[in-house]
Amino acid sequence: MQSNPVRPTAPQRAAAFAGAGLMRLLFATLRIRVHDPHGHLSAPPPHPVIYAFWHNRILAITAAFLRVYPPGRRGVLVLTSASKDGMWLGLVARHLGMGSVRGSSSRRGATAMRELLDRVAAGHDIAITPDGPRGPRYELGSGLVYLAQKADIPVIPCHARFGRALRLETWDRFAIPLPFSRIDVTLGRPESVPSGAKGAEFEAEQRKMESVLRAEAD
Image 1 (spheres, rainbow, N blue to C red):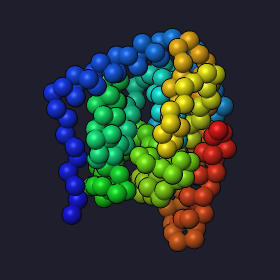
Image 2 (cartoon, rainbow, N blue to C red):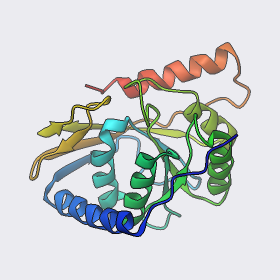
Image 3 (cartoon, rainbow, N blue to C red):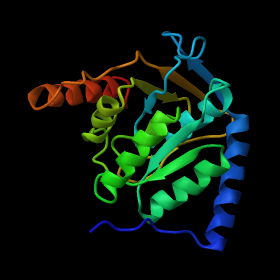
Image 4 (tube, rainbow, N blue to C red):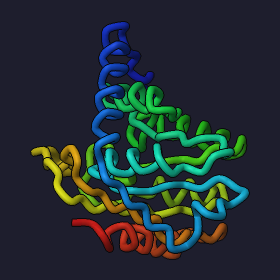
């Protein structure tokens, strides 16, 4: 039996609004350089894409995309867990101009996947942290590859390097860039998953995707 997502209270909604405001203040101080060697930003594709990045880089990627996300697209939806942590992330994402889909491999997974496919069909881009919400760090589950295959859209690996950052004592060593520091964000080559891949071939695609994302992880 699937669990219903945790719903926020009024005080939690207010706290998320305040938190998003603080994040915007921090982001305004950052020196962000976005490297786009494959032209995703200069010549956006006519179809949706999946932006994939490790969980501990959420703040860096969000800060970059608030500045450079191509205009005219339907917008980015963030996949969050159905837990309390996912609730907070979804609330903050909304105040930063993004939507969210609640679910994970362990809770509401099938429902969330159907909703993601529907949103992709409507033209939305998707953002996924494939080692979230609980890790292990830098290990990729099957959900990202499965979604890319079923939706028939490419994955854009997103990498981030920090000039100066505070690393929390969490499972993923979550990184908070320090005010006025520099962040380098790189959009990798689009990766597609063959529609007929299954079994060993599907697992090989999953390993390849994990290797691409790990290439610039610290």
